[in-house]
Image (cartoon, rainbow, N blue to C red; front, top):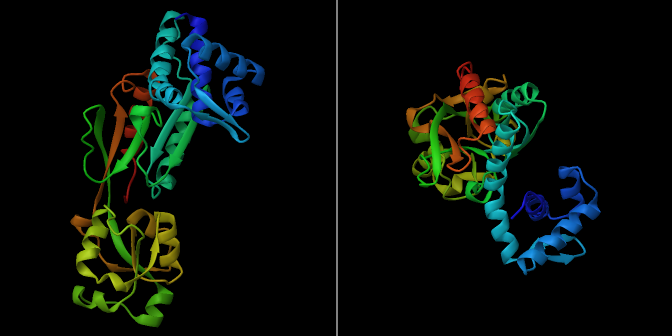
Length: 295
């Protein structure tokens, strides 16, 4: 395999990741005809079809999916090697994919934006979702995860921060229904909770034991929707202290408890952990977190 072949592999990886020739061409800064030529040449070398072509774009075959799983790690290691060879080992550039649970982008985004400003050659993809992105298939360079410490043997896991959570209600809810004065009175009130009945957040595990399921009358799939529903008076619900402090119309129903605290972890794949951009980003975000208060 030559350096020219690596260009073809990198092109095919971008098509597999983005699903279109035009998207890959934009990311790589080449003409769409170059993308097609690279794919045709690579399929010819391998003697296998990497994609099924259709009107909406390109869908990876089994061989294409295997390419997607290994190419991200190869791309980062190759970029690191190329930088050292060219004497540019202090340059942080290319793409950095950071994923996080949906409840904390307001906390993280300013620090991630500051990192990008320090390294203008870097393109950030900040993906927030409740699903777990697969680091071993190149879906992310750094994942910020909540809950129990990840145990995958291929992951490097570092403790990050802890988020304190409290139970809140809007003033309009309190005006209509009053507020519980004791834990025993919770079962007579209405709640905003998770759509997933097995939600892993520690405060939702606690709620399942404290309140009958039928009292959770408004269910959501992400933190932003939960917060909006609580502010609208749909029911009592949980949110972080930092988020609740932003709204003077919220009333603290129960003070934060240690068992409601969420641990966040910085997770990287062992193959990418030592790359320059990942190391610099981890150092940056951990330093930034030292200045965060009321979390």
